[in-house]
Image (cartoon, rainbow, N blue to C red; front, side):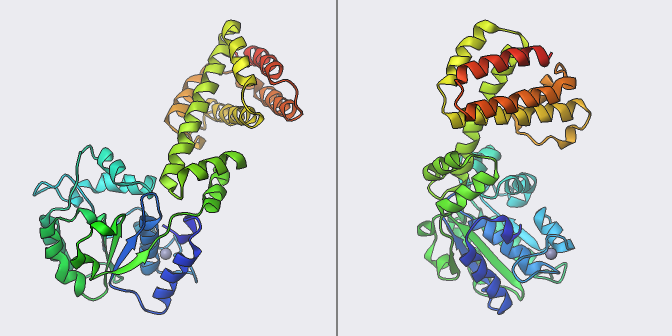
Length: 365
Ligand SMILES: [Zn+2]
């Protein structure tokens, strides 16, 4: 992970970078931030920076062998410890495939998302994990850089586990760094707290979330609304944003089904529905339509790899591309563009929608 991939938090990034440049890297650090904060993301970017073979002034390169391995979470000198179902033989290493997928997909996810991912109700970090770790620490670093031990959610260390790692946490072997990533420092044992250097990760600023959401193709109004509801929690912002796009997709998919079936009985009430939306929402649906039509074209023309969509839209695109008449695509796109233009100029939305629907019904077949 690069620092540049994390929105905002310039001050925190700079502090971490300087600690490396000034050779003041604490050997046990506690990245403390609430759920949906960049605590794990920053710890990961910091780890990449520490072991990067060719770092710039303020970031890891993302291209060297260390960065490539770090990004895939397969670097041999990086250990991850996190809550699991915690039987004696159920250690983090047994869940590495799920963990990699979880973190690479979205490093802002929380404890409950993790439990859901590995289908357990409650997690903890059993003492066997500490024993295994201490065994590994006695080995030399494989690649000559830092050995990094990430403990995600040390809140779930059992007392026995915590006690077992106190000594190495206080005096780790040379070039070994512990990066603890927690949500709730109140729930940490004081013995752990006293052996780590606190690094506070604040919530994201609204303006940074807004900027990010706009880059993700949300309108400015919508981005502001989501950021207000998310309250600095990026995970929540993703969830709100996805839920809305799910609804939009459903609406659009139904519209296309009715167009294809030339179902005027359904299209008329849909036009009323469309008419009741805000101008912004109307334009969003039409713009979304343009994206989907383009993806249908790519799929139908044998370039499905270029399609980057979520599960439901992808399914729709795959099915629809089999019946959609791609020869008319440029005409279709032009009609949708014109409809956006008319809505912008306050032509009655119901008329624009019905007119467009009837033309699409003819062209998509
Ligand atoms: Zn690098």
